[in-house]
Length: 302
Ligand SMILES: Cc1cc2nc3c(=O)[nH]c(=O)nc-3n(C[C@H](O)[C@H](O)[C@H](O)COP(=O)(O)O)c2cc1C
View 1: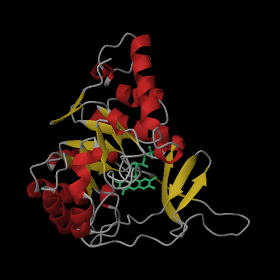
View 2: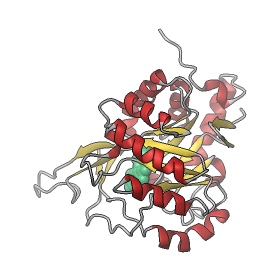
View 3: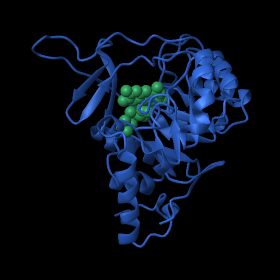
View 4: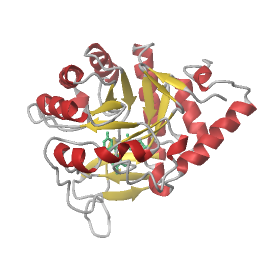
C-alpha cells in the first residue's frame, strides 16, 4: 500500500505523525524512536519566554490512559532557536514546530521567529489559557480564530490549528480557524480529566485537573474527527487521540483524517511507529487497498 498522503499543501510519506510533547524536542528522540516510519514529527510547544511547567507530580497513570499536567514546560523561543533548531535537519523526519502563547500577539511573534528555523509547518497549540479571556483559546471560536489569523499573517509556512475535544461546539471552532487561514487542523488534544488517590487523598497531579490521553480517549477523538469532517468536508485533518495499533490509524483515516497522530503510545514504546506502520501495510494487503489515501473518509453507513 502506498502510504503517501496529502494534507493540504503538505505531502507526507506516511500518514503517521508523532504528536507534540510525546517525542521531546524531536531531535533528542531521533536516536530512540523510529522516525523513518513517520510522515512528520511535531516538536514540543514553544512560547516566547521560558515556561517552568508545573511542580511534580505531573504524570499519573489512570486505567490504560495517562493524566498529565506538565504546564507546557519549554525553554522559550530564543533558547529553542539556539539549541533545538540547528539539529532539526538531522532528525530524519520533517519536523513541525508547535507554537503556544498566552495572547494572540505572543503566538504570532513566536511563529515569526520559528519560521526561519527549518520546520516544515507550524502547529498552533490552542490548548492554553487565554491571558485576556481566561478560558482556553481552543474552546472559543473567535479567540481561536484571532490566534490563527495572527500566525497566518506571521508566516508563509503551512499552518495547522490544534483543536481540543473539550470544545462545546467543536465544529464552530474548526470553521473559525479554517476561515482564519489554517491549512489544516489536528483533532485533537487531550481530554480534561482528574484523579484523586484515596489513600493519600491527594490529586494524581499537582495541577489537579489535567489532560487525559491514551487508549481510553480514542472514541472521543474519533467522534471529534467525524464532527469536524461533517461540518467541513474538504478541510485537511490530522486525527489524534488514543492510537496504539494500525487498526486505530485505519479508524481515523476512515473517519476522514488524512494523517494520524501518535502520542502517549510513545511512553510505552518509543518505537511504536514501527509496529503500527507494519500493521497498516498488513491491513492494506488483507483488504486489497493500494493507497492509504483511498481509506480517507471511506467509512460505510449502516
Ligand atoms: C506528556 C504529554 C505532553 C504533551 N505536550 C503537548 C504539547 O506541548 N503541545 C501539544 O500540542 N500537545 C501536547 N500533548 C498532547 C498530545 O500531542 C496529543 O494530542 C494527546 O496526548 C492525544 O493523543 P494520544 O492519546 O495519542 O496521546 C501532550 C501529551 C502528553 C501525554
